Image (cartoon, rainbow, N blue to C red; front, side, top):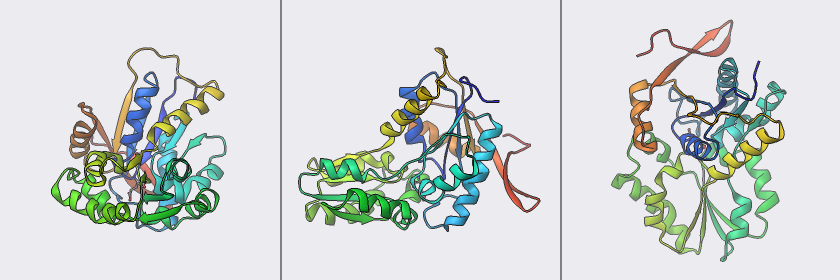
Amino acid sequence: MTCFSSPIGIFDSGIGGLSVLREMQALLPGEALVYVADQAHVPYGPRPVSEIQQFSEAISRFLLTQEAKLIVVACNTASAAALSFLRQRFPHVPFVGMEPAVKPAARKTQTGKVGVLATEGTFASERYADLMARFAQDVVVYQNPCHGLVQLIESGQGDEPETERLLQEIVWPMVADGVDTIVLGCTHYPFVIPVLEKVGGTAVFIIDPAPAVARQVKRVLEKAAMLSANTGAAQLDLVTTGAAGNFAHQVQQLLGYEHAVKTAVWQVENGELTLQFSQVQL
Ligand code: DGL
C-alpha cells in the first residue's frame, strides 16, 4: 500500500534523469526517492519502441515493489515511446513524463528560429510529431539527434574537448542561421550546459525542462494529497542495472555528493522481462 510517506520512483536509461532528480530534491526535500538508471541498456535513443516499452514496464513494476506513489519517467525517449503505454498498463499509478519544451521555446524566441536537441527515438515519435503540430506552426525548428552525445556524457567525458567539438558541429550551424533558443530534449544534456553556453554564446537561450517537471510532480502530489509531511532528511535509493561503483562515481561527479548504490539485474521469468535487486550487493 502506498501512502503520502511512500517514495517517488524515477527512472532513465542512465544518469540523465539525475538532472531531474536534483531539481526534485531542491523543490521537494522531504520526499523519499528511488532512482533507477538502466545502464545495462543505455542508450535508449536508437532502440525500437517495443523494447523501450518492455524496459519501462519492468522498471515501473520494480518501482512499485518499492511502494512508489508516483513514477517520473525522467527520460524523453522513454516518455515518447512508453508514457501512454505505461498509463494504460498501470491505470492507478500517477506518471509524470517529459517532452521537449517546444511550446515555451516558440514563445521565447525573438528570431522565430528554435533548436531542439533530443534523441532519434524522441524525434521519430508520434508524441513529438503532435507537439510540433500543436506548438511549432509559427517557428522554424532545427532538430539534431546529437549522435554520440549521450555516450560521451555517460562515460564522464562531458567536459572533454571531444564533447565541445561535437556540440560545435551541432550548434554552430543553427546559430549561424539565427537560432536564439535551444531546447534540451534529453535529460542527459543539462549536464553539458556549460559547454553549450560556451559554444552557443550569450545570444542563445537554453531551456532545461527539469525544473518544470519537478513543479509538475509537486502539483500532482498536492492535488492527490500525497505530499510527504517529512521535514527531516529524506531517504534516497540509487539503483543501477550497470556497475554500482561507476554509478556512485558519476553521482559524485554530477551531483557533488557520495551515496551508496544498489544493483538490480534483468531476468526473464515465465517469458516476461523482470528487474530485481541482485543477490550480491557490492
Ligand atoms: N536521457 C534520455 C532522454 O531524455 C535517454 C538518452 C538515451 O538513452 O538515448 O531521452
